[in-house]
Length: 273
Image (cartoon, rainbow, N blue to C red; front, top):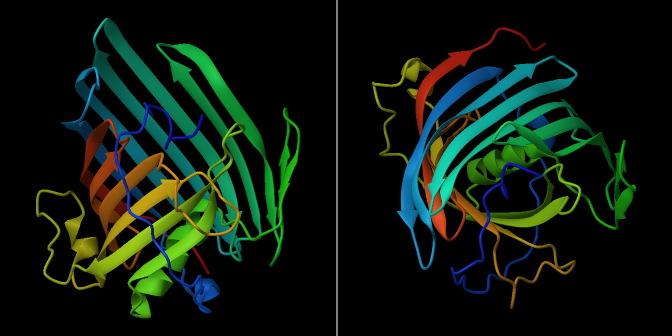
């Protein structure tokens, strides 16, 4: 179970059709993300429709290491949701390696619900220019007749699009789940020059005097044609994305309800080439 769909309830948000050419920046391999550890405190944002969520609290930790030939990534998302009828504690963990060129992504995920193991997944994503293949360790392999971006390559591509002055970016993105391995992600990009990182963030100095953008990413089930007409989104997030890959003002929107994620700690690691 991936971090995007841990809490997905029936969708109630209507999103208008998006249409644009899928031109990917040519500089994706040039953007390096500095290793860093970001800690976010989570709380309940909005509830909509018939959502039975009464409260939420938790923590999300994103830990990235630049190991020169690629990156290692560890994530942990722990959320306690209070619902009508009880409380659910979800604990999601990811450990991954992504090659610098984005052509190899090794991953292992595990999710627990109230202390009991839920779904786990591990394997390799191999990416070519016009095809991709996932070799799962405990599930059937799956292939795609298109390039599928692993998570960090997706972040870097959005940064490159923003640097180039593009106002949106779209790609098929891999998230490690067995039942829903890929999403078609559409990201709107706008200027955030006037946004300032809060001084309450431990390590806010790493966010001063660098470029930043507002991003609004909507995740659809893949359609194979890049056309989202008639599709219902499954997840959405908004944030301020900094040129170094750090995000602030993060909102994880599960469509029936949302979680606000406030960056509280940021540390930059030594490493890289």
